[in-house]
Image (cartoon, rainbow, N blue to C red; front, top):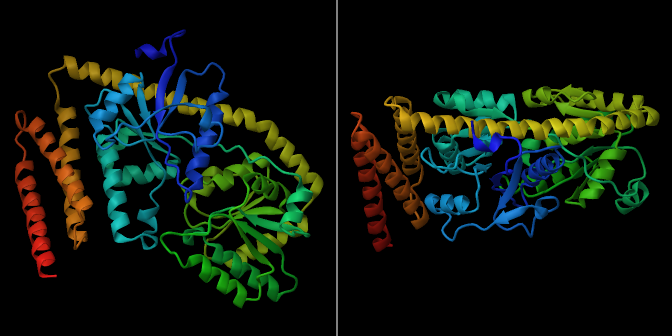
Length: 472
């Protein structure tokens, strides 16, 4: 048994890599909720530490211990050395340190949106995601998915890595609220409204709400819809402006209002005071909007996608992602049946249930961490004492073959290699060669021929590029 499991021993230290960017607020909210749940767990056994700077992070993340990135983060052995120096026993939500690392990696894959909606991604971004996820499948000791739906996708795309998966369904604490009168006055809201707190990205499907409003408007008075969130979709930069133009052309600019990014406490107030929340998204990993609606006890009108069904909000009503009439009907029904007293009752019930839900969330994560550490401790002992290494070498072989395919895809995709791409591909080839050197003394394997083939391709591409640059 792993020593850290024994009662009364020192807390097990794990490190989080928090991918904080202003364009992916959902990722930051995920870690805020995980930290909040974990830090309030009675008799918890794990201690989260942040890798990198915490000054720009919100509470409670900024209150956690942190360790700095090594100077050359791309050198995995240097990162591993830094983690060992700080008594870290698991690298969670980061990248794989390798099958032979003394510190296991529990890597997080939020979703496989690029597989289901490839038209929302560039070919290069799809290739990068495929490469990164393949590395996780091959090299991570364990993989964390946010839903059974995502786990099903992982097992489909990486059938040889099915034993690595763990599902962690996060629970969200709703944002704090400001005084409703102050917030309503700030945004000049003087009537009942529906609220969409999603980022304004193309896959979030705000256009369906516009079409639903057109239908309602044609039959009489039109309800107010308030939308907040990041308006810059890096994959489709014109999306927000195009959407606003469509709203204006429909004569609904006073009925479908976009407020952009607003204070998080104002978001809490808008959610709390809305007739209902709407989430028309075409795809989600595990929707923060839905989880916050559950924690508030709010009605939520949501797209009928498998993840939303899995989240199963008690007051959820579903519509097809391409059926504006169904959404329009649900909006009419929500307006007609709205009762302030029933809303208050539902919100009090949800508030009372939230602490237990957060405890279950934290305990689920802790158990996953402890199980991964226990399993890796057993695997390490078996490898050091057993003559049967076939599973170990099969994993190495699978990883190398996947890397080869990834490198070849990148070479075929990129007509011109910049220095960063070239160095990245050369680095990946070096890792494959290292695996081959581990494999070749024990197994007959054709990797040597593949490595020579890809090296030849890379060399030809570089030579061609040098000639082109001279002729320019």
